Length: 243
Image (cartoon, rainbow, N blue to C red):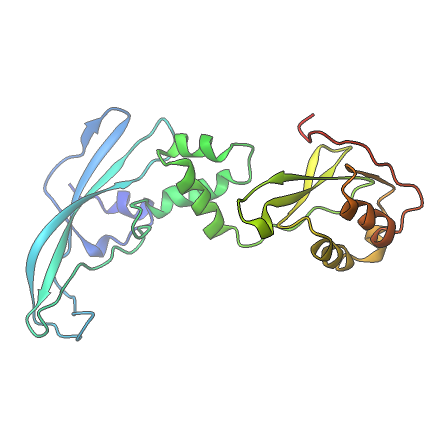
């Protein structure tokens, strides 16, 4: 069977595969497709010689899930070459496959789109058959910068324990009291970092903050009094942003 349409849908270049004369295999919640990696047209990445021979094969399975209900798998018999000139071995990379993690580009694009929704990392991982840690890594690799939300009328500040590193044990959470939204997450709650962060915000935008809610941590009081230049500061014990 010719799998070119399926491979193109996955974001893979069909020219790097040789189709087997077989039909897809039905599995629990999808299909298993089997192809061979092409075994000609390569050069040694070490010495650039084209004098190669096949050393052995290795079979991998690539996650091609579209959802928790469709669990298609692409099984590829990869070829490993040995160079006759330098005697080194190598396996050509598969274009369109997440190196080392065996996830198709199509699945990655679907995961990227999930980041704009309300699903947790754990829920996304369950949907696409990945660990929570792997989904978090995909997020970190894809989302290089998350812009903060505008300063709210009622700004809440609190911290959560994030690391065992003494220099950065806590991250600082900025929260919009009225809209129940996180404005930003700061990597440090110390005064020099907070001062630099708020000084970079336009004074007109900072002036939109009318009320400031935090615990009695002195750095937060300094932010309100000096940087936000507030005449009336509301200091309360803000126990949790979840309520």
